[in-house]
Image (cartoon, rainbow, N blue to C red; front, side, top):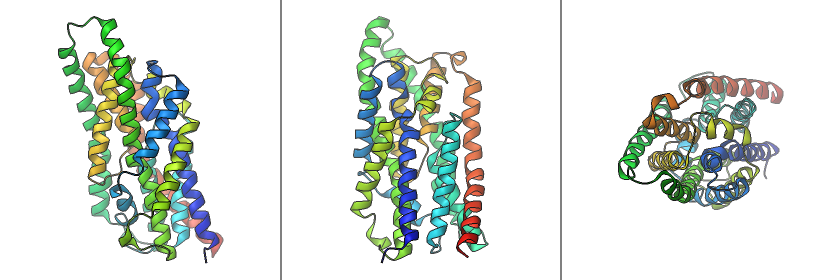
Length: 331
Protein backbone atom coordinates (compact mmCIF):
# COMPACT_ATOMS: atom_id res chain seq x y z
CA UNK A 1 0.00 0.00 0.00
CA UNK A 2 1.28 3.46 -0.89
CA UNK A 3 1.98 5.48 2.26
CA UNK A 4 0.90 9.08 2.76
CA UNK A 5 4.56 10.02 3.21
CA UNK A 6 5.46 8.57 -0.21
CA UNK A 7 2.63 10.60 -1.76
CA UNK A 8 4.04 13.72 -0.07
CA UNK A 9 7.50 12.93 -1.44
CA UNK A 10 6.15 12.45 -4.98
CA UNK A 11 4.16 15.68 -4.70
CA UNK A 12 7.20 17.62 -3.45
CA UNK A 13 9.33 16.14 -6.24
CA UNK A 14 6.86 17.32 -8.87
CA UNK A 15 6.70 20.78 -7.26
CA UNK A 16 10.51 20.90 -7.41
CA UNK A 17 10.45 19.82 -11.07
CA UNK A 18 7.79 22.42 -11.89
CA UNK A 19 9.83 25.16 -10.19
CA UNK A 20 12.93 23.88 -11.98
CA UNK A 21 11.04 24.33 -15.26
CA UNK A 22 10.03 27.96 -14.74
CA UNK A 23 13.17 28.80 -12.72
CA UNK A 24 15.45 27.66 -15.53
CA UNK A 25 13.35 28.57 -18.58
CA UNK A 26 15.50 31.65 -18.93
CA UNK A 27 18.58 29.49 -19.53
CA UNK A 28 17.35 28.29 -22.89
CA UNK A 29 15.40 31.25 -24.22
CA UNK A 30 16.63 34.46 -22.59
CA UNK A 31 19.14 35.32 -25.31
CA UNK A 32 16.70 34.31 -28.06
CA UNK A 33 13.96 36.54 -26.66
CA UNK A 34 16.23 39.50 -25.94
CA UNK A 35 17.66 39.49 -29.46
CA UNK A 36 14.10 39.12 -30.83
CA UNK A 37 14.97 35.94 -32.72
CA UNK A 38 11.67 34.52 -31.45
CA UNK A 39 8.60 36.01 -29.74
CA UNK A 40 8.38 35.14 -26.04
CA UNK A 41 5.40 32.76 -26.34
CA UNK A 42 6.92 30.89 -29.28
CA UNK A 43 10.27 30.65 -27.50
CA UNK A 44 8.65 29.26 -24.34
CA UNK A 45 6.66 26.69 -26.36
CA UNK A 46 9.80 25.57 -28.20
CA UNK A 47 11.75 25.37 -24.94
CA UNK A 48 9.00 23.33 -23.27
CA UNK A 49 8.91 20.91 -26.21
CA UNK A 50 12.67 20.41 -26.33
CA UNK A 51 12.85 20.07 -22.54
CA UNK A 52 10.28 17.29 -22.82
CA UNK A 53 12.27 15.49 -25.54
CA UNK A 54 15.58 15.87 -23.71
CA UNK A 55 14.18 14.39 -20.51
CA UNK A 56 13.84 10.97 -22.18
CA UNK A 57 17.32 10.72 -23.65
CA UNK A 58 19.53 9.55 -20.77
CA UNK A 59 19.59 8.10 -17.25
CA UNK A 60 23.18 8.68 -16.16
CA UNK A 61 22.52 11.86 -14.18
CA UNK A 62 19.39 10.33 -12.61
CA UNK A 63 21.38 7.32 -11.40
CA UNK A 64 24.02 9.63 -9.91
CA UNK A 65 21.28 11.21 -7.78
CA UNK A 66 19.60 7.90 -6.95
CA UNK A 67 22.71 5.90 -6.05
CA UNK A 68 25.81 8.09 -6.16
CA UNK A 69 25.36 10.57 -3.29
CA UNK A 70 24.59 8.51 -0.17
CA UNK A 71 25.33 4.88 0.74
CA UNK A 72 22.50 4.22 3.18
CA UNK A 73 18.80 3.47 2.79
CA UNK A 74 17.05 6.66 3.81
CA UNK A 75 13.67 7.17 5.42
CA UNK A 76 11.09 8.82 3.19
CA UNK A 77 10.92 11.88 5.41
CA UNK A 78 14.62 12.49 4.79
CA UNK A 79 14.02 12.58 1.02
CA UNK A 80 11.04 14.90 1.62
CA UNK A 81 13.29 17.18 3.68
CA UNK A 82 15.87 17.25 0.89
CA UNK A 83 13.21 18.31 -1.62
CA UNK A 84 11.79 21.00 0.67
CA UNK A 85 15.24 22.48 1.28
CA UNK A 86 15.90 22.66 -2.47
CA UNK A 87 12.46 24.17 -3.14
CA UNK A 88 13.01 26.88 -0.52
CA UNK A 89 16.36 27.86 -2.06
CA UNK A 90 14.98 27.87 -5.60
CA UNK A 91 12.07 30.10 -4.60
CA UNK A 92 14.37 32.48 -2.71
CA UNK A 93 16.81 32.86 -5.60
CA UNK A 94 13.92 33.24 -8.08
CA UNK A 95 12.42 35.98 -5.88
CA UNK A 96 15.80 37.74 -5.70
CA UNK A 97 16.32 37.28 -9.49
CA UNK A 98 19.56 35.37 -8.84
CA UNK A 99 20.43 32.68 -11.41
CA UNK A 100 21.34 29.69 -9.25
CA UNK A 101 21.62 25.94 -9.59
CA UNK A 102 18.57 23.78 -8.88
CA UNK A 103 20.86 20.77 -9.32
CA UNK A 104 23.25 21.70 -6.57
CA UNK A 105 20.40 22.90 -4.36
CA UNK A 106 18.89 19.40 -4.49
CA UNK A 107 22.22 17.63 -3.94
CA UNK A 108 23.25 19.94 -1.10
CA UNK A 109 19.88 19.54 0.59
CA UNK A 110 20.08 15.74 0.25
CA UNK A 111 23.54 15.75 1.84
CA UNK A 112 22.36 17.93 4.74
CA UNK A 113 19.25 15.82 5.38
CA UNK A 114 21.32 12.62 5.32
CA UNK A 115 23.84 14.01 7.82
CA UNK A 116 21.07 14.96 10.25
CA UNK A 117 19.32 11.61 9.77
CA UNK A 118 22.46 9.52 10.38
CA UNK A 119 24.13 11.93 12.85
CA UNK A 120 27.27 11.33 10.79
CA UNK A 121 29.04 12.43 7.63
CA UNK A 122 30.26 8.89 6.89
CA UNK A 123 27.21 7.88 4.87
CA UNK A 124 27.74 10.58 2.26
CA UNK A 125 29.74 9.29 -0.70
CA UNK A 126 32.20 12.17 -0.60
CA UNK A 127 34.34 10.79 -3.41
CA UNK A 128 31.27 10.63 -5.64
CA UNK A 129 30.20 14.11 -4.53
CA UNK A 130 33.65 15.41 -5.43
CA UNK A 131 33.81 13.66 -8.82
CA UNK A 132 30.20 14.13 -9.92
CA UNK A 133 29.22 17.38 -8.19
CA UNK A 134 32.01 19.63 -6.92
CA UNK A 135 34.45 19.28 -9.82
CA UNK A 136 31.73 19.68 -12.50
CA UNK A 137 30.31 22.59 -10.46
CA UNK A 138 33.47 24.56 -11.15
CA UNK A 139 34.67 23.08 -14.43
CA UNK A 140 31.42 23.24 -16.43
CA UNK A 141 31.06 27.05 -16.15
CA UNK A 142 34.74 27.44 -17.05
CA UNK A 143 34.25 25.18 -20.07
CA UNK A 144 31.24 27.24 -21.09
CA UNK A 145 33.20 30.48 -20.77
CA UNK A 146 36.19 29.11 -22.70
CA UNK A 147 33.99 27.75 -25.48
CA UNK A 148 32.09 31.03 -25.67
CA UNK A 149 35.32 32.99 -26.00
CA UNK A 150 36.93 30.65 -28.56
CA UNK A 151 33.83 30.21 -30.73
CA UNK A 152 33.20 33.97 -30.69
CA UNK A 153 36.76 34.65 -31.85
CA UNK A 154 36.30 32.02 -34.59
CA UNK A 155 33.06 33.70 -35.71
CA UNK A 156 34.87 37.03 -35.88
CA UNK A 157 37.47 35.48 -38.18
CA UNK A 158 35.00 33.65 -40.42
CA UNK A 159 32.56 36.54 -40.82
CA UNK A 160 34.99 39.45 -40.71
CA UNK A 161 34.08 40.58 -44.24
CA UNK A 162 30.33 40.23 -43.83
CA UNK A 163 28.12 43.29 -43.55
CA UNK A 164 26.77 43.54 -39.97
CA UNK A 165 23.14 43.49 -41.14
CA UNK A 166 23.73 40.34 -43.20
CA UNK A 167 25.50 38.62 -40.28
CA UNK A 168 22.71 39.57 -37.88
CA UNK A 169 20.11 38.21 -40.31
CA UNK A 170 21.95 34.87 -40.49
CA UNK A 171 22.53 34.50 -36.76
CA UNK A 172 18.96 35.54 -35.97
CA UNK A 173 17.85 32.37 -37.72
CA UNK A 174 20.69 30.18 -36.47
CA UNK A 175 19.82 31.24 -32.94
CA UNK A 176 16.54 29.36 -33.18
CA UNK A 177 18.53 26.15 -33.66
CA UNK A 178 20.99 26.96 -30.89
CA UNK A 179 18.14 27.77 -28.47
CA UNK A 180 16.47 24.45 -29.30
CA UNK A 181 19.78 22.65 -28.67
CA UNK A 182 20.16 24.49 -25.36
CA UNK A 183 16.60 23.59 -24.28
CA UNK A 184 17.19 19.95 -25.21
CA UNK A 185 20.39 19.79 -23.17
CA UNK A 186 18.61 21.41 -20.23
CA UNK A 187 15.93 18.71 -20.27
CA UNK A 188 18.54 15.99 -20.77
CA UNK A 189 20.44 17.05 -17.63
CA UNK A 190 18.03 18.88 -15.33
CA UNK A 191 14.95 16.68 -15.61
CA UNK A 192 17.00 13.68 -14.54
CA UNK A 193 17.59 15.02 -11.03
CA UNK A 194 13.95 14.68 -10.10
CA UNK A 195 13.77 11.30 -11.80
CA UNK A 196 16.66 10.21 -9.60
CA UNK A 197 15.13 11.50 -6.36
CA UNK A 198 11.75 9.86 -7.14
CA UNK A 199 13.50 6.58 -7.92
CA UNK A 200 15.39 6.87 -4.63
CA UNK A 201 12.04 7.31 -2.83
CA UNK A 202 10.49 4.35 -4.64
CA UNK A 203 13.46 2.14 -3.75
CA UNK A 204 13.22 3.29 -0.13
CA UNK A 205 9.50 2.43 -0.05
CA UNK A 206 10.12 -0.95 -1.70
CA UNK A 207 8.33 -0.14 -4.96
CA UNK A 208 11.35 -0.20 -7.27
CA UNK A 209 14.54 -2.15 -7.88
CA UNK A 210 17.59 0.13 -8.15
CA UNK A 211 19.13 -2.22 -10.71
CA UNK A 212 16.15 -1.74 -13.04
CA UNK A 213 16.92 1.91 -13.75
CA UNK A 214 14.35 4.70 -13.97
CA UNK A 215 10.72 3.56 -14.42
CA UNK A 216 9.16 4.79 -17.66
CA UNK A 217 6.20 6.39 -15.86
CA UNK A 218 8.64 8.45 -13.76
CA UNK A 219 10.30 9.74 -16.94
CA UNK A 220 6.95 10.70 -18.46
CA UNK A 221 5.73 12.39 -15.28
CA UNK A 222 8.95 14.40 -14.83
CA UNK A 223 9.15 15.37 -18.50
CA UNK A 224 5.53 16.60 -18.50
CA UNK A 225 5.98 18.52 -15.24
CA UNK A 226 9.15 20.24 -16.40
CA UNK A 227 7.52 21.13 -19.71
CA UNK A 228 4.55 22.60 -17.83
CA UNK A 229 6.84 24.64 -15.59
CA UNK A 230 8.78 25.82 -18.61
CA UNK A 231 5.55 26.97 -20.27
CA UNK A 232 4.91 29.30 -17.30
CA UNK A 233 8.19 31.08 -17.94
CA UNK A 234 10.78 32.74 -15.73
CA UNK A 235 10.78 36.46 -16.42
CA UNK A 236 12.65 37.52 -13.27
CA UNK A 237 15.78 35.47 -13.97
CA UNK A 238 15.42 36.03 -17.72
CA UNK A 239 16.16 39.72 -17.19
CA UNK A 240 19.43 38.89 -15.42
CA UNK A 241 20.59 36.23 -17.87
CA UNK A 242 19.22 37.91 -20.98
CA UNK A 243 20.66 41.38 -20.75
CA UNK A 244 22.21 41.73 -17.31
CA UNK A 245 25.63 40.25 -18.05
CA UNK A 246 26.40 41.91 -21.39
CA UNK A 247 24.62 43.67 -24.23
CA UNK A 248 23.29 40.90 -26.43
CA UNK A 249 23.07 40.60 -30.19
CA UNK A 250 22.22 37.56 -32.35
CA UNK A 251 25.86 36.53 -32.74
CA UNK A 252 26.55 36.51 -28.99
CA UNK A 253 23.24 34.75 -28.38
CA UNK A 254 24.03 31.98 -30.85
CA UNK A 255 27.58 31.50 -29.57
CA UNK A 256 26.54 31.46 -25.91
CA UNK A 257 23.72 28.95 -26.44
CA UNK A 258 25.87 26.66 -28.58
CA UNK A 259 28.79 26.78 -26.13
CA UNK A 260 26.66 26.07 -23.09
CA UNK A 261 24.75 23.24 -24.78
CA UNK A 262 28.02 21.53 -25.75
CA UNK A 263 29.35 21.87 -22.19
CA UNK A 264 26.11 20.54 -20.66
CA UNK A 265 25.86 17.58 -23.05
CA UNK A 266 29.47 16.67 -22.24
CA UNK A 267 28.71 16.62 -18.51
CA UNK A 268 25.47 14.69 -19.06
CA UNK A 269 27.42 11.99 -20.89
CA UNK A 270 29.65 11.73 -17.80
CA UNK A 271 26.63 11.45 -15.48
CA UNK A 272 27.38 14.78 -13.81
CA UNK A 273 24.47 17.02 -12.74
CA UNK A 274 25.45 20.58 -13.62
CA UNK A 275 23.91 24.01 -13.43
CA UNK A 276 22.54 25.10 -16.79
CA UNK A 277 22.12 28.56 -15.27
CA UNK A 278 25.79 28.89 -14.47
CA UNK A 279 26.95 27.46 -17.78
CA UNK A 280 24.81 29.75 -19.97
CA UNK A 281 25.83 32.75 -17.85
CA UNK A 282 29.55 32.10 -18.20
CA UNK A 283 29.12 31.32 -21.90
CA UNK A 284 27.57 34.77 -22.33
CA UNK A 285 30.48 36.24 -20.37
CA UNK A 286 33.00 34.42 -22.59
CA UNK A 287 31.32 35.49 -25.81
CA UNK A 288 30.92 39.06 -24.58
CA UNK A 289 34.53 39.39 -23.41
CA UNK A 290 35.76 38.13 -26.81
CA UNK A 291 34.26 41.31 -28.24
CA UNK A 292 35.81 43.44 -25.51
CA UNK A 293 36.27 42.87 -21.79
CA UNK A 294 34.54 46.10 -20.84
CA UNK A 295 31.31 44.92 -22.50
CA UNK A 296 30.75 42.42 -19.65
CA UNK A 297 29.00 43.79 -16.57
CA UNK A 298 31.36 42.22 -14.06
CA UNK A 299 29.34 43.47 -11.07
CA UNK A 300 26.37 41.35 -12.17
CA UNK A 301 28.74 38.50 -12.94
CA UNK A 302 30.16 38.64 -9.40
CA UNK A 303 26.63 38.40 -7.98
CA UNK A 304 25.99 35.28 -10.04
CA UNK A 305 29.37 33.73 -9.19
CA UNK A 306 28.66 34.38 -5.50
CA UNK A 307 25.55 32.21 -5.81
CA UNK A 308 27.71 29.31 -7.04
CA UNK A 309 29.76 29.31 -3.86
CA UNK A 310 26.89 29.66 -1.39
CA UNK A 311 24.37 27.24 -2.94
CA UNK A 312 25.89 23.99 -1.65
CA UNK A 313 26.63 25.10 1.95
CA UNK A 314 23.31 26.95 2.32
CA UNK A 315 21.26 24.05 0.99
CA UNK A 316 23.16 21.55 3.15
CA UNK A 317 22.03 23.67 6.09
CA UNK A 318 18.46 23.98 4.75
CA UNK A 319 18.17 20.24 4.10
CA UNK A 320 19.49 19.47 7.57
CA UNK A 321 17.05 21.91 9.20
CA UNK A 322 14.10 20.48 7.26
CA UNK A 323 15.08 16.93 8.24
CA UNK A 324 15.39 17.94 11.89
CA UNK A 325 11.99 19.66 11.97
CA UNK A 326 10.16 16.89 10.09
CA UNK A 327 11.83 14.29 12.33
CA UNK A 328 10.52 16.10 15.41
CA UNK A 329 7.01 16.30 13.93
CA UNK A 330 6.95 12.58 13.09
CA UNK A 331 8.56 11.47 16.36
